[in-house]
Amino acid sequence: MNLILAAIFAFIAITGTLGAIIEKDPFAKLISLSVIAGGVIPFIVDRGYLDVAIAVAIIAPLSTIFLLFACRRESS
Amino acid sequence: MNTDEAALIICAGIAAYATVRILLEKNTLRKLPFLNVLSFAVAGSIALLLPHPLSIIAAAAYFIGSTLESNAIASTYAGGIREE
Amino acid sequence: MMVDPLHILIAAAVSWINFVTIDLIFRLPQQGGVSGAREIARQIEDGGGTLHGGYMMGNIVSSPDASAGTLLAACGVYIAGIPGGILAALLVYVGNRICHDPGYAGTTGALFATFIVYGFSLLGFSPAEFIAGMVIAILTIQGISAVYASRLLSILWRWSRA
Image (cartoon, rainbow over all chains, first blue to last red; front, side, top):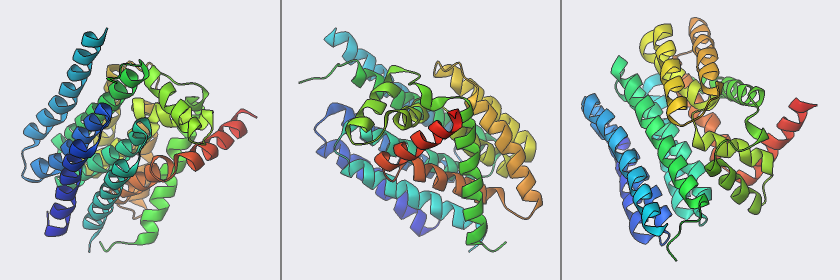
């Protein structure tokens, strides 16, 4: 991965973090978490850690889904 | 620049564009199509960065995870569960 | 192999035609498959788009459809030829069932795309160009303007039903 690609994916991860901070709607914050994962996973893949990448790719969305279940249980 | 590098730059560029559009969009549910574009671009980047058979599984796992997550966010939003 | 912008544009057009055609055949714009898709369609309609186009865009977000199948098949063929494409189709099938989607749009899209991408690779295209092309194709539908994309999809939906 050359410098330009690393800069682009880093920009994606940082923008996701900014979004998580700036956004007011909680669902928009969750979307920003997804953006962060999208920016970080290419770095993991580039180093050859494909099993780690698969684990992160499954665990990160799963945590969001469990979070949504928890919020739904609290409200109902 | 050979084909693989060009395809990677295109995917990364589209991912960056989609990220900016996500940030700029005010309506939460209308952010989800841009998140979908980001997932496509990152899944393509995974396959292009490391051409190994396990990368197909990694790209598919990432894409399906992202789709499940977007679906969960949209469904929960649709259920009207919002913290006022 | 030096990059040829024309190849990428042709790959984008072919991917676009493949996934839109298969999604129209499987009637994605007819209704929202899950509540999330219906809500997204409603929001797109509120923003000035049309309902059926919104249903298709919502369905693309909620479940792996022919667009996802085309992309993953292109990745599969890039890495491992036709067996890679078939593996990708299998993964898309599993993904559909995980997302509670009983349809076959994704699997069909993946299988068609496997053979299309392999065929074009015999003509001198690289499967990498199809990966980039498919990302460009989905950008035109989901990533530029929900209003105009949903209108275009509604027009295509009406044509396909006539």
